[in-house]
Amino acid sequence: MPFGVRSKPTRTRGRALGGTNLTALLSKLGVTAHRAHRRPQIVRDAVGNFPNRRLAKSSFHCATLILPIMNRPRFPLFALALLAGVALIGCSKSAPKLRVGFAQTGAESAWRTANSESMKSEAAKRGIELKFSDAQGKQENQIRAIRSFIAQGVDAIVVAPIVETGWDPVLREAKQAKIPVILTDRTIQTSDESLYVCFIGSDFYEEGRMAANWLAKHVDGKGNIVELQGTPGSAPANERRKAFADGIAKFPGLKIIDSQSGNFERSTGKQVMQAFLKKHGKAMNIVYAHNDDMALGAAQAIEEAGLKPGKDIVLVSIDAIGEAVKAVAEGRLNCTVECSPLFGPKVYDTIEKIRAGEKVPKKSFNQDELFDSTNAAAALPTRKY
Ligand code: GYE
Image (tube, rainbow, N blue to C red; front, side):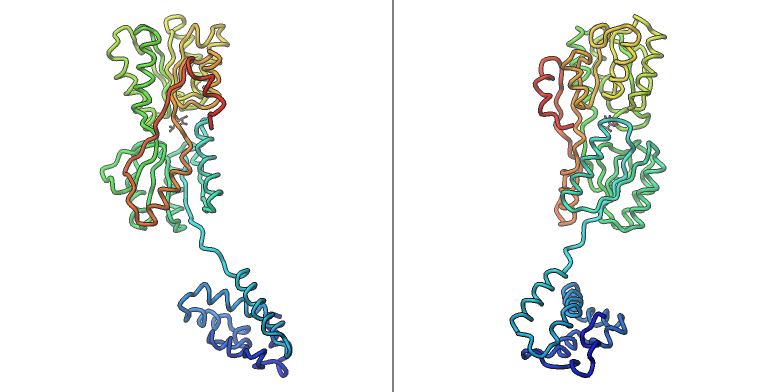
């Protein structure tokens, strides 16, 4: 029974308590306890008349809780005030949570796992309601997830676009729904840059350039390279490929003799490397992998073929996941270029700025480092992914 007034109607309804008339209190809300109990719509209407709807609602619900105690003849005024205060604090709800939808590409690599974890843990830390969708490597799943976020009316949508093209129609839908879209990790090709608010990620071209320059120095501008590409059509695969080719072009002794996709996956990288070993044997002496997982898979294939990765075959890759930096320190890989996946804090800071009406940079990039035998061991204790 929510109302004390209804349990003893003849004795208590409308009685003054310590100078406070409860019926008057309720009538301030435009409703009597009896009517309110029967007709929830009346409560809603009354609450709707208050300038601060949330406070009005909380006050009303709290009044219904404390009425049975308050509505006694000699209930002291101070106890009434205390009780009402405590009830008000306890009943008032906190501000609504920010609701963010994140359309992630999948779980293809250790880099990706660290990226998802950063987005999830930072959301939890800030009390943000994160709707996380794993597209399992398929663009159509990501598009479906974005549509579902639009239908749910989230406050912002974050996308790590698996490939560069094909986003305009769904981004137009988000724009029509006035939901800001933040691209993270991977860029897109679009004819309308207004379809997303900003991009937060790494400079993939710069990473490929750093890998090429390091390699040219390390092997003295000579060698036969096999390339393990990332997901076909993805920004990191496209950019890392182009930058590396541009970087080694100045060295006529350096040649890419084969190039295939390992889809950024360790197992696929290993399989492609097994095929390369069969096909090219000793003709190749360098592997350039678009990410560490594929380089580590290639290292396994090299070992299984009875060769020493890092010595018989030089391995250069990108990401700098903990396991790869360790392998560089041990001499099993030769170089890894950093690409931080820890975007959570920056992404949510940006969303908060957008909601506050602040201007944010259209594109922002991480500053990435390079690890080789000179600095990998020293860096290990402070690596965060
Ligand atoms: O290098 C790789 C992956 O898009 C930068 O995606 C990212 C890449 C990263 O799974 O490991």
